[in-house]
Length: 587
Image (cartoon, rainbow, N blue to C red):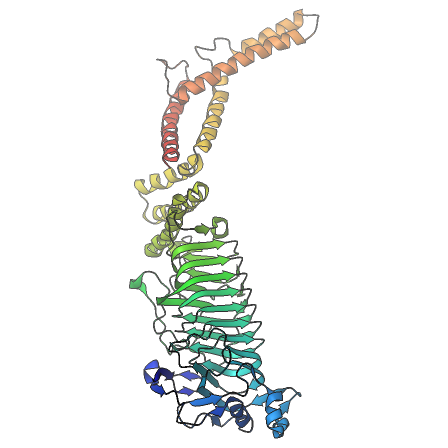
């Protein structure tokens, strides 16, 4: 019985990745009797590379190797193991513990599963001065076996150029490595798990791979590009991202065919596969057809002193959690999340909220508005300037204006559906603030009576009821209006207040002149008169404000016209109050 394997092998050259269409599809038919070609000890390839120069390339004589291991349960490949087998290799030691491999190295091959559990390999204490392509695949008589107990461990590795893995089904671990460009890509990367931990990597690319789980934890990272990755769980935790020094020849290339970070496909901007990366983004997670089931972004710090190099989330996920991160960079959030979504306890610079979020109570959505307030912008692509809807230049762009409103609207819908009225009202007020900016711009540029009333009515609604979201504020404002007009009416006579204030003062003076027993009783008499007058003034103000009328206006002169104006003002404001009250009741 034959077992069938497909191995994708791509021509590998310095600084470039050739298109996938140029790759060779090698069909390997493996029988139970083994390969026709002789097995090569994996450690021998590293030994052979030691004597080669930077102008040399070490690669298999055919398209691949068939490797053997001395210890399938725990093969360690390091300077000590090589010197033990080949004592003459000692002369290549650097600092008594490191081997420097200067040639371009291609190690592509298969390893038969001959271990009790699964093959385990540790490669450590190497400095690679040139490009490295290291791709290993385990095979056995069981078709499509998943090697959950396998290990391919890289520890204390330094790579000055590209370190590339093209096919791999080991559980893969990078720990304490310093790599200029780590590239893991191709459909045939089906590792059960991939770990990158406690390492320094200037440029990390994961492309079109299908591991069971990925963990990137506690690293110093530069540019990270994750494209068309499919996995059950992806954790990016406690990393520091900071743009590295970009080489002048810029040998870093995006592997994404069509890099689209905009929800509106009519305005898509793409980066071709051969587009050289020039620090256009710090972290980009993108997918069109594939799903990262659970994506956790926790406790990371994204450093950018210019606040201009964005972080992009544009993947499909069932669950997504972005928690306790510090973004000194713009965040472009255009993920499609179908189940649970959490965006909480983060520090943002700006956020372009184009994400598609679940909005029904059956799902769990937690978006902390306090983190987002004042930070929402519209930034459709990495090349566009964040749009805030404030300046006259921005307000000329009505299309971006309504895209920004759409970002607010998605949040408003989520908060309403989950019964979070406080945040829903706050988002709505931000939306009305944007509208107010636009009305002011339209009145300034176009003029007109309609624009005038639209502007100042909205300003009135903002002050009086917070655009219908706060009836209590309307009650408070109405109370102060009544008191203000009461003070005015206090100094005017009315049919309800026949005693003038001058007469009260005159009676008080006369009483004092004739009274020899003190001032308390005359003062109380005067205070009583003033209290009655002020009470009548308040009654008149309330009567005018609520437009009760009682027939004729009980005052004369200037006060009569003031009373009419207050009546009109009260009728208008109370109508607004009733609408605001009904709006809150219905909500």
